[in-house]
Image (cartoon, rainbow, N blue to C red; front, side, top):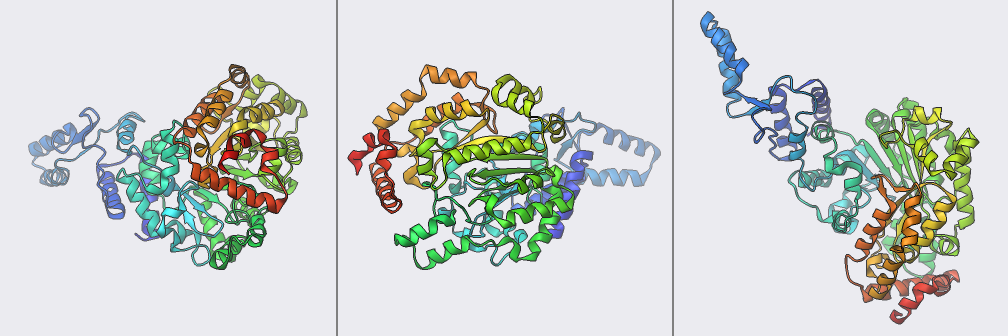
Length: 559
């Protein structure tokens, strides 16, 4: 289906969603879904009779017919008869239904495992290829190789045939295999990104069907513009960090096409095609959020260009920016760009503390990263007294950073409260092989120095650094540490929650435990992890067993 046609129907159905659908509108919508996705959807087929009318039982229609018969108005009779033929056996909403009355019907039609991301979001990886989201497992998708920013513009990437096929799978109620990361998290009781951000489309079912599913453009962008980065974190690779490349070359771990691909990843590709800037401006009125990941996004020139382009459209204030940054960069010029946007969510990837942090996120230094976090606080707040209260007083933090309904206040209100930028700061803790043993220490440290939200992200890839591969006897000790009453009490007394779902830290810790226990220890993967660790330790002149002596005691028998 060509883009102009999709644009037409998107505008038509979005307008009808707010102003009210006619039976013809619904019929046209069904035809559109069938033509584009090959799926039959009838919202009213099994609807209660008090919510719908049909051609056979529409009281107003029968009354008009009787009046026409009395007056022998043949044109009216023919018109009503033709409508009855068209709508025979069909149901459609009763007139003048209260707002929201049909929401349960639409919600019931959203498949249980439905995900909005393929319809509403585009994730661009450092190599320029596109996928539905960051959790989509690349290794299982051959169609993922269909194109990249090297040979396609961003609209063409969003409309790739394999993306359209993913949409059809979700509309049919299927669970695509490359979405395994979300299915695993949900099976362990965790709130996957599918659930947290959209509840599978059930939060706003009417908008899901008539606005999101028909949208010809994304409403969210997840951008890894390149692999340019200043760190070579242990859980990362040359695919996502240019800093890793030299080390992999020196160790002979990459060559040929793989090496060529990694070098391509370190090249910024968005601005090489002027069409992308034009398309981005066209998309801007519909974009609700842009996520910047890395590499390190604050180092990338294309990041600044995209912010500037959005600001020029005059739509920046309607857009939320979301960052994952390693915290090693402080840039006041970027702060000035942020002042034009709605909300800015700054997520610091701080997985550990002290020398363990320095080891895991080499060559970043923990003390320097913490200092940069404080600098961002200093820039954001015009009222230092307020800033100090927020950091030190959990009740004041709660009052300042949320409404009475527990939602984030609007950008206008946040700026009225003394902020240059409507900014939410979080610690984004990637939990895996290296740090799950120390989560209690990490949380104590971070919550002592900062009053911030925390978000946990379990390691899925690489598989040998996932926490569920660890020895069973080590898991038992970890569980005991995390279940200590004193530690649990401290977490309860802090105003700290896990975003974006609003769950408590203690609840999320329980989910981490469940995830860790979701599979048995894997000696082969443990051995592979230790072999990989030793290889890079020798190159960097570091020592895993010296930095992590407690973990080493459990793992040394596997080497």
